[in-house]
Each structure stands twice: as C-alpha cells, then as structure tokens.
Image 1 (spheres, one colour):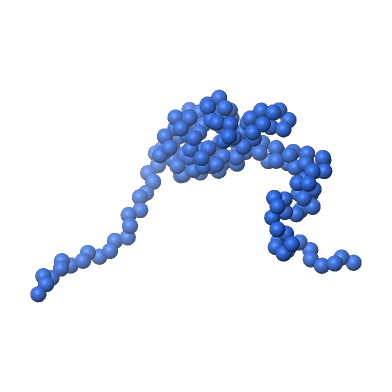
Image 2 (cartoon, helix red, strand yellow; image 1 turned 90 degrees about the vertical axis):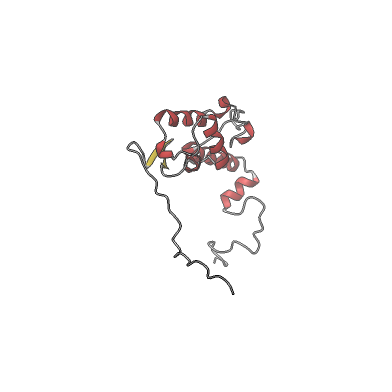
Length: 166
C-alpha cells in the first residue's frame, strides 16, 4: 500500500520579467544615421547599423569599455561617443585587420571598415568599376544573372521573362 502523494499545485505560467526603464532611458537611439532599438542589449542593438555584425559589435563593446549586459537605451552619451569612435577608426583600437569589411581598399590601398551610408556608396562604386572594365562579374551583375558560380540552367526561372520574344 502506497502513501498518498501530496496534492499537485496548479501550473503557473513562466515568469515574464518586465523591463524597468529609468527616466533617462531612450527607446530609439540615433547612431551613425541609423535608428537603434534601445530595448535590446548593446551588442545586438548596434548590429542594426549596416556593416556591423555580431562578432564585431561584441568586440567593439569590449574595446569601448561598455557593459554588454546593459540595454542600448541605458547608455550614457559618453559611452555612445566611445562606441562611435571605435567604429570609425577600429585599427586605432587594435581591432585586427581581418575583422574589417574593406581590407586593402582598391583606391587607397588601406584597411578600413565601411558602415552605414558609406557601405552602399562603396558597393555601388565597386560594381560600376567592374562593369566599366568589362569584368566577368561586372557583366553578370549588369545582365542580372547569378554572379558567384551558382547553377542557373534550371533554377531561378521565376521573376524573369520566359519564352521567345518576337
């Protein structure tokens, strides 16, 4: 004969922690012409800026001495300035050149990291240069075909006009 088990307590939903915002909390920050969500933690929030991935964001926070457990909206103006300084010249803060997105630039020959609006401009200039010199990659971009060696005989037929033009 078994002893009766104690009555089971009703299941409670998992606890959801509310974010307590201070008075100087910013829900949207403006960093490098980009709106950054202030509710996210700093490394993930700054990945909203074009040209910054998670690994670079993590390293930037460490180099700028910013607490990575903070929310982006809790950052002080000084901390934001430090982050922007690290981003604008990462080589001065000993971020390795292999982490930068523009190694040995075609025109200047220097290592740099392009971000936000500059990234769009640089990509457009590179494609124009490839088209101008009639490079294979440039021509494929110009024709609207796959560029990086993907198969295109049987795939990617939607979106393009199919059939013979008369």
